Length: 96
Image (tube, rainbow, N blue to C red):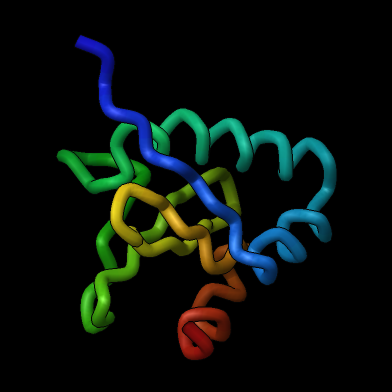
């Protein structure tokens, strides 16, 4: 049986975030979002995906190198809200 596919949608602000990145970084991030979020956007075991506490509705984080993609589940869609360098994560999380 083939794993269920989720639609990965980049919000306009996440699209702007990814456009600011270097090509290589953006490609890696795109590859990771496809590899992880299309098939299993929930954390299982020791993974690059983490469910963040104190957010309602739930907020998740995907780790890709030095960058983080923050997303929420909306029905069967993965909505990427923001992409940021790990050192800027706190600032971004305050806005989400």
